[in-house]
Image (cartoon, rainbow, N blue to C red; front, side, top):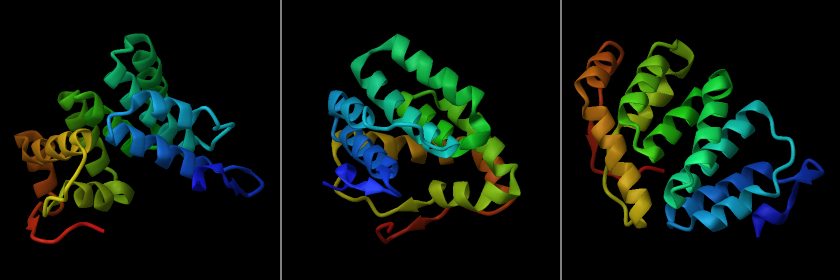
Length: 165
């Protein structure tokens, strides 16, 4: 499996995190946490993705202490990946915090296009239950008046009758 292959002579951090995200989407949080155990010393961005995957697992397990630790880390290191913090807030179901994070991202010209792209509405794909729930939360986030008003300053969210890449 790709997560077991090396990357630049070390642990394949990105594939291990992708595997953890996949397990989270499938509703297999214990497996997601196991997938993150191989990660050594990731970059700042990698650490944020790692904590996002763990936060999504912890919320599914009802592990409040683990969740609090992951969220605290992400809040303290938001500059390393504000989008990872936004994704974690959506996974956790903290929609007010997710809206605030989305609005902060929209205020950053370098990240604005990415968040507007994430908020677009595409044709539904067959998805595992948690992934479908997260998709619905993204749609709800885009529909919030505070987020929609901020998006309107820079672009728009449309429905695209195609599947995302």
